[in-house]
Image (cartoon, rainbow, N blue to C red; front, top):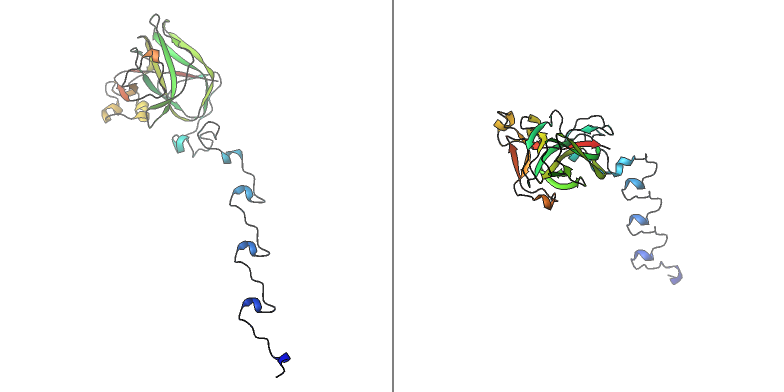
Length: 268
């Protein structure tokens, strides 16, 4: 056979084949005509509907979505699923609904008291108010708002910048805050501290709603038998007035059989 006509021997390697299809690396990037991948982030999608500003904000925090804008979402994931109208600018509001804050109690000096505050819709506060039932000359009080810590007062959020004059005759004493403070819907605590023993109006020990918020040590206390329902907390360790309101409330003891001083909130 003429050597020029004999077939050319192949090595068996794919690279030696003529008219072979082009191989690719197996990577998606090597494919032609492939659809474009995206990162999985909503912003990378084309033709998407625009999201509102709520999409990037948390619920129930300052600067986020107001609690109860969605009736299914409350503070801390659904604490209070009810709705209410907004608070009126310049008006005064009690700490609790259905609970009168007119029970007078002679406070003890150098003792921290904490009464619950229920905020059902975001509220911006301009001032805090104490109601003095019987003043004692040259006495004063401090008032601050604390966060909730599993049903007990936690950390101080803010306080009135000056002391309350509790040496007056029976009257309400108002102190404006240094700047307006916004509380999102939830439970907070009004904490008071005095340097004497004036009479201060607050939450009495005859209201079931207080027990509903903070619980009670027994069914007897929840039922309110002979004034046994809880009215708030007192700190177990002493706190000198000169030391001011502490950053953290500390250990607590439930108050049974006596009222707890309470603050009134003025809306900005």
